[in-house]
Amino acid sequence: MIGKIIKGIAGFYYVHVPHKGIFECKARGIFRKENIKPLIGDNVEIAILDEEHKKGNIETILDRKNQLERPTVANIDQAVIVFAVAYPEPNYNLLDRFLVMIEEKGIEAIICFNKIDILTKEQVGSIKAIYEKTGYKVFATSSIEERGIEALKDALYDKTTVFAGPSGVGKSSILNLIQSEILLETGIVSDKIGRGKHTTRHADLICFHENSYVVDTPGFSSLDIDHLSEEDIKLYFKEFSRYEPYCKFKGCNHLNEPICGIKDAVKDGDISASRYTSYKQLIDELKDIRRW
Ligand SMILES: Nc1nc2c(ncn2[C@@H]2O[C@H](COP(=O)(O)OP(=O)(O)OP(=O)(O)O)[C@@H](O)[C@H]2O)c(=O)[nH]1
Ligand SMILES: [Zn+2]
Image (tube, rainbow, N blue to C red; front, side):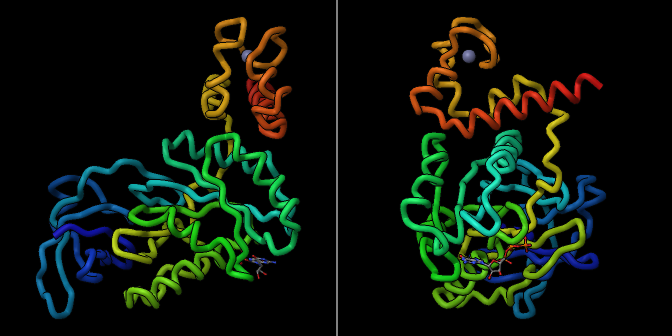
């Protein structure tokens, strides 16, 4: 049977098998055979030892598609970056850093602006507009008024999703809503394992629906960009590439070059000024790092 490791405690792994429930497993033999340690998020093949008491043994770890560190979690499909529209005020440079990190990992990014109850519809609209041109999915939610949660949730089915974002933006509030609705709908008892504050280096997955998992401690604890190159940054501002053919110089950095498709797109409003500002800031930051 194939399941997913959602939690690990003291040598036991808790494996969620869709439509069957959660099995408490040991990983006897695995270390020896494959010389790899099972991770939260691993898809594993288990042998059932005791159906009634839901006990099993992990036999095989299936190939990992990716792995995030600190905390370590495997096979992430996408990341929801949550920012508040206010309290705290959105820091777009920080948001764009998150996007760069997520692009680097090669996973999908979704943007969620929460606390929309605080601002007018127009104000929220202009914040969303900054990112709608990027091609990322953008959601607007209020966990207090339970608005927009359904639409966000629809984007999470059949995926494993990390929630990332600064402190106080409402990640836990959103996750609680996603989870509790599902508990009512499906009767899956996840006993809310994995909720609460993590100080450790591991995170638990919360299964909110068959084949659908969320994790609220993302592997983006460091947003340092010093290991990246300027080329990487260019690439990770993914809406830029469309306009690159209009740059006069091959390898254009979109900074001081006289004829630049990206700068033109910013002028025309096709690329958000805010995104371009973040781009320049990140490139400057890299140059500063290199200088030392
Ligand atoms: N007005 C408003 N306040 C909200 C909303 N969502 C959350 N809050 C409040 O914002 C504060 C932070 O919410 P949390 O859900 O703890 O935020 P978090 O992102 O999980 O924060 P950390 O655990 O520090 O990472 C709480 O006081 C919430 O009541 C919202 O949609 N609207
Ligand atoms: Zn250019």
